[in-house]
Image 1 (cartoon, one colour):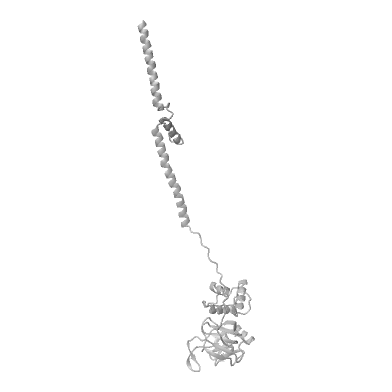
Image 2: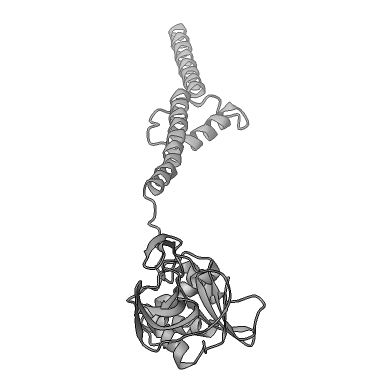
Length: 304
C-alpha cells in the first residue's frame, strides 16, 4: 500500500515536470527569448513596428515582414517614376502648342489716308522744307510729292508711301541740303531728281521733279534726239503764264532757262526721269513758283 502510494506520487511529480517543461519550451519558441530585453527579440519587434503600416502584412513571421518591406520598396520607385513622367508630359504639351505671336501693326501712311497722323506728317514735311501745300489732314497728290522729295533726299525707295523708313527719316529731321553757289538760285539735282529753291544760301523748299529720261525720241526739228537735261548754269529767259501747247506736249506756266528747256507744271511727275528734257513739277508747285516769284526773269538756274 505504501509502495503504491509512493509510485503514484512519483508519476504525479513526473507529469508536473513534463508539463512545466512543455510550457517553458513553448514560451521560448513563441517569444524567441523575450526575457532578454537587449537581445534579438527587441530588434524583431522594431522591425515589425516599421512594417506595421503595410496592410498586406498578415503573418507575424519575420519572413512575412521581409516580403512586405520588399513590396513597399519596389512600389516606391514605381511611384517615383510616375512622378517624373508628369513634367515630361507637360513639357511636351507646351512645346507642341506654341503661343501665338503678335502681328506688328502697320503704321504706314499712304495716298487716300486721312486724319491727325496725316496732318502731323504734312506739318513735319513743311517744317523740314519739303513743299506739299496746306496741312489739311488728307494724303493727296501734294503730300505724295512731298514724301517723294524726302525719299529722294534720304536715298530711300521712291514710292510716295510714308512707310517705317520714311517716317523714321522724318523723325530724324532729314533736311534738304545743297552745296555752295549763288545765294539766290533754283538748283536742279539730276541724280536726286529734286528742284531746290535756295534763298540766302539755304534751301527754302525742296520740290520733287522729273527731268530728261535719256531715251531716244522723234524730234520735229532734228529727227531723232535724246531726252536729256543738260547740266550747267543758266538764267531764266522767257516765261508764259498759262498752258502753252508745244510740239512735244502742253507745258503749264513754263519758265524757260535753256532754249526750249523749262521748269513747268505737269500732270505726271514720277519719282524717276521721264521728260523730254524739261524739269517737271506739279501744277500747284508751279503756281507756288509764280505766286512767290521764285524764278524771276534773269535769275540763276543751276543744273547738276
